[in-house]
Length: 90
Image 1 (tube, helix red, strand yellow):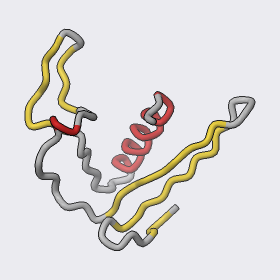
Image 2 (cartoon, rainbow, N blue to C red):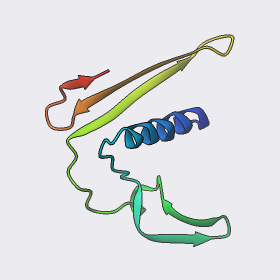
Image 3 (cartoon, helix red, strand yellow):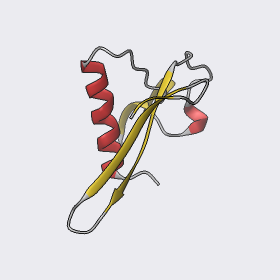
Image 4 (cartoon, helix red, strand yellow):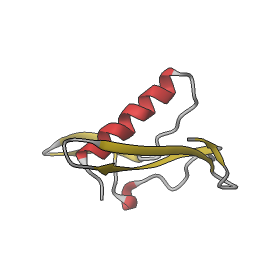
């Protein structure tokens, strides 16, 4: 289940990788911009609206987090090879 915290961590990690000159690709882009009463959007989580083709990626960042009592959070993330599943970094 996606949460606000998960979205913030994801976007922050995306930004940090880009700042450090990693080549990053956002796969959530649509073929066109959607316009509705809530605004104009290019990114989507609607699978039906995603592009059919996404350029090949060498690595994928995946992760999880657990929220504990007293506002404590444990975050686990890793970079894995998209073809072999080998862990490149954690």
